[in-house]
Length: 377
Image (cartoon, rainbow, N blue to C red; front, side, top):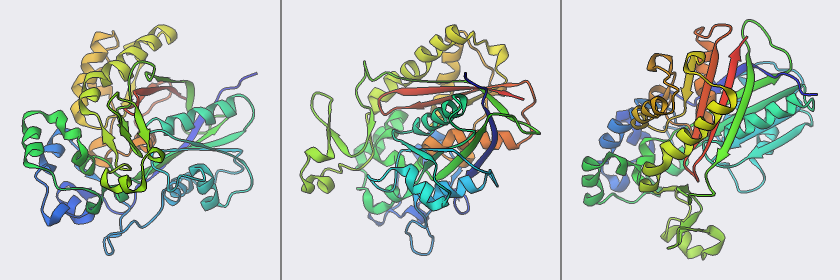
């Protein structure tokens, strides 16, 4: 028999002091020793004003691993007692093997417990949350911790990027979506980790009952859009790093994060938002008046108007005053973003008992999405 599950604590960890837009290159370095002409164009489009990097300012090197970053977020939960399951999601683990979750477990030094690792991109943290929810709901665990984390800054360091051509920069002025080329990542991705404690009973003064978590993929109809450790063949399929000689790994930037911008622009709203949410409206009887807080994970403020228009089109017109996002002040932390968003709202005192929260988490890897429905109790 299944049981109700409650998020009783949330936490997040953002390394070092926030980095403003004019400080980015002092931390990540300048490509070719020259300031980027693309930086202001990309930042104007994405709306991010500050973010965090786990980079030591003195050495210019990473100051902690992804596993250490995640463990710091979990410790921010406080004393949680005996935990039966730990589920960790990330886009960028510290190594190919072993899994991210067991590395986090090692950092924590907790007694033996079930540990699972979730791969992917932005949705990996939400997949970890669903596993933790189902573990507690099924009675396998009394307490579970779920995490999402990203350590993006090491791949954003100047030494990993080539100088942008005049053609690319000029194209940015005419078409803002071209900002989603290789250079855009340096001005959009950042570091952070979040954690949630899930239990069978609520705890005061406020807990969030998980009503449902729905994940879906459009990979049956769409090719890969955002990828790393691979290159695209002429037919649109991916050739993974094992299919390339070692000499290609650097010369062809096999491990760089890449994105098919046109594919993204044409499909992100339909494939990750309109279609799956329309199905969930029918399945769960969602109505705009029943959603008190809408928490969309957006990689850029560029997408906000499109999301608002889509909500109107599908009959779920949630007004902007009921949206909550901290993208502009926390940056795009990928799979950690939903955790960091919810933690800030949860601690703000703005959630009242009886209110319902709807979270939206897309990823452009192969157009997957997740929706999480919570009730404050």
